[in-house]
Image (cartoon, rainbow, N blue to C red):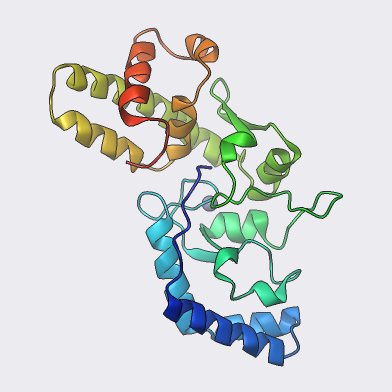
Length: 241
Ligand SMILES: [Zn+2]
């Protein structure tokens, strides 16, 4: 997962969403009512999806797994527990069908104090809660929020491990290639960096650029280390091209 910047919803969209919240309210504010209204709400869904697509990384990657295309509007707090948040802009994220329908579904774990135990990439910096171990490409939870997010979003499912492993190899090669061009003053270095930052599994690049120098020495090849150092100083540690 990478941090994402939520764009403000235009006034017209906010008004539309508010109107549909009133409909849920008038229909009894139940989960059944929220589901029924959401099913009918083609205009709000069109507005919300366009906004989410503008916020998503690369070619509209899923905001949870960073791999597949984000196709579904996910209610971060599910309608089962928050029917009145069905049409709240801040409760919408875009997810791939797998993350939305197979892993997360209606799950919304809470801490004993009632706070949500899931990482919202538009609110939290995932790096505060998760660390990607490059020896295994498994995510490890640094906090209870991180551990619950791994479980609920299925962040360590086998297909993601395979994809991250390949993405790690590719990222190291691209960063080395970028470094060479950068040293030569080749303007195509910028395009190489942009291509990497727009690719799926950008969470791997994000984690690489934030890797502790002591750990970097143990998991990266010697020639990747100076390239990564140069990448950090030129491209920074954010996943935005
Ligand atoms: Zn996904």
